[in-house]
Image (cartoon, rainbow, N blue to C red; front, top):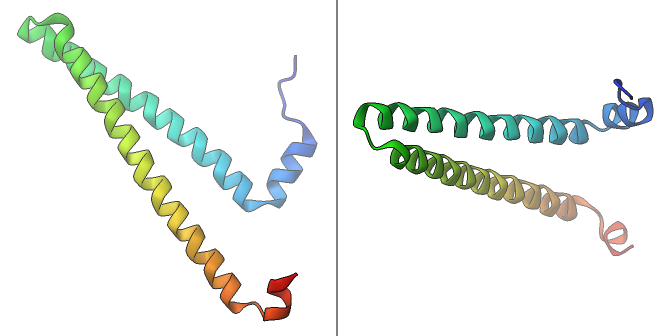
Length: 102
């Protein structure tokens, strides 16, 4: 059983700041989504307990949280892709024509 990461992978990620940024961002987003769904589920549970409508608000709040997470991820992805497209267009515009052809 391995408890430590492979040193080759660690060196590769350390040499590439975008890889480290992407892996840390993905892990953070996953934890944020899971925590958000749990919090909204618990809020629904409390509302159901006091209102006496046992599964109704648990389901509604969980679905609300999942839809909200999806929308947030969609807009974040769209913003990141637009930024990367603008960077690529700027790089292409700055390069001399002889390098752009090859």
